[in-house]
Amino acid sequence: MAKLKVLLVDDEDDFREVLAQRMITRGLDVDTAESGQRAIEIVDDKSYDAVILDLAMPVMDGMETLGELLKKDPNLQVIVLTGRATVEKGVTAVKMGAADFLEKPAEIEFLVKKIEAAQAKKLAIFEDNLDKKISDITRKKGW
Amino acid sequence: MSDSGYDRRDRNPADTELKFFGAITASVTHELNNVISIINQVGGLLEDLSYGVSQGQEIKPEQMQKITDRISHQTERGIGIIKRLNTFAHTVDEPVAEFDICALMENLVALSERLATLAGVRLTVQLGDEPVLLTGNRLKIQQVVFLALKSLLKIAAKDARLEISVHREEKGASINLDLAMSEMGVTPEVTLLKTIVGQIEAEMEFAAKPDKTIIKIILPHRAGFADNTASG
Image 1 (cartoon, chains in turn brown, cyan):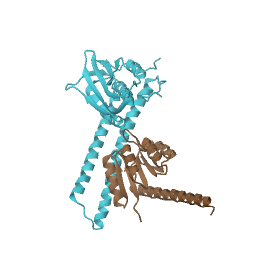
Image 2: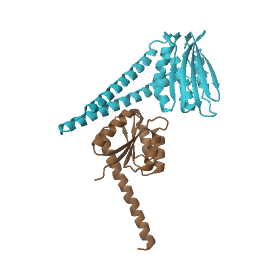
Image 3: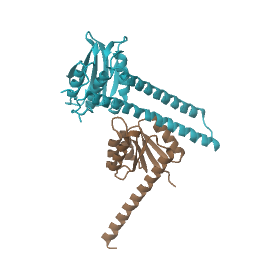
Image 4: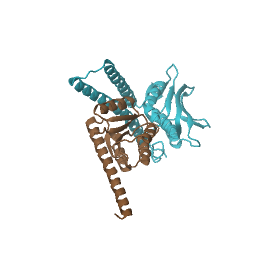
C-alpha cells in the first residue's frame, strides 16, 4: 500500500522536526516547510495526501497560506493546527476550505487518523471527478 | 476598532489597561503553549524510541543527545517566558513605585518579540549601562510604549527593523521607537496614542521620514499619575 504523503508546515524548528520524525516512524512519507511561502513553492512540484499547517507563522500566516494553497488546488486536504484559545480560527479555516483542524499539542495517533481521513476524502474526490469525466465522454459519444 | 487594537470609543483608561494586559498575556501564553507542544512531542518521541528498543532497535548516542538538547533548550525557553510574564504581572503591585525604566523596557520588548516576529519585523532594544530611575505607574507607561510599538508594527514593511532605545533626559527619560522601513505612504495611528500619553503626563514627538518613522515618548521623573477617569 502506498505511503501517505504529508507536507508539514510549521515555523517552530523543534516541533516540525520531531513531529516529522514521529510520522516517518509510523510509515508516512513526510516533507517539511518552515514557512507558508516555502510550502507554496513545494506544492507546485509534488502532490500530497494532506498538508498539516500551523496557523500562527511569521510574515505569511497560516490563513493566508491556506488561501494560497487552495487557490492552487481547491481539493488539497489541509489540516490546520491552532493554539488553545484560537479554536475559532480553526473553524474559520474549515469554512475557508480546510479539511479539518486540531489544537496544539496534537496527539500523534489522532493526527495520523486525520491524515488517513484526508487521504480517503482526496481519493473520493478523484473518483467522483473520474466518474463525471466518463459520464461526459459517454454522453458525447451517445453511448 | 482602530488598527492598534483599541476602539476609539475606549475612554475608560481601566478598559484599555485590561486590553493591554490581555494582549500581553495572550501572546506570551501562546508562545508557552508552543514550548509545551514541543516538549509533548519530544516525550512522545522518547516513547516511540523506547518501544523501538523493546523490539530490538538500537538508539544512537547522538540521537539521545539531540533529544536532550531539545528538552534543555525548550525548558530554558519556557522558564524565560514565565519569568518575564511574572515580572510584568508584578508591575501592577503598586500604582506608584520607583523603577528602572531600562529594565522595564527590556522586559516589555522581550514580551513583545513574538508579535514583532509574526509581523516580520526584527525588534531590538538599546539601553545604557546605568539604570534610569523614575517614579510612577509602570503599567500605564508600558501600555503607552506597547501601543506605540503596535502602531509601528502595523505599518512596518517585511524585514523591517524596529529599535527601542532609552535615554536619560533632564526632564526624566525618553523612549525612542525607531522603525526603519515602513510601508510607503502609511502613517501610524497616533491619535489614541497621544490621548493616552497625555493621561500619564508624558509628551510625544512623531516624525515620518522617507526611510524611517520615529515615535519618541518623553517621561517626566514622576510619570503616569493622571487620575483614572474617562477623558473627553
